[in-house]
Image 1 (cartoon, rainbow, N blue to C red):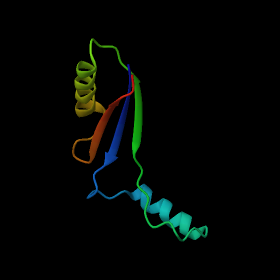
Image 2: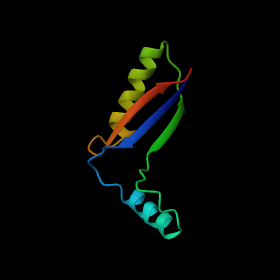
Image 3: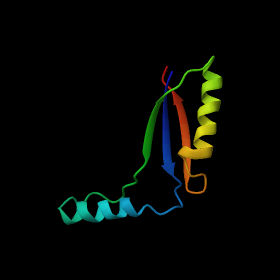
Image 4: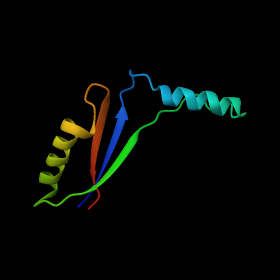
Length: 80
């Protein structure tokens, strides 16, 4: 199964990369840009007996390695 993991920085956590990009875009004349957030997407191929089992295993992967639970939230999307 193909699984997409969307990892986003929590809204209350600063995104210095986003702030830098907004500033740079405004300096280049793109003044309409007021905010940018940099998130991550990870795509995995995972085998398992069912969608539920794969989703549970991938959630464990996120909690233990792929996402920082202090700074980030994640969403697991099974693409089959």
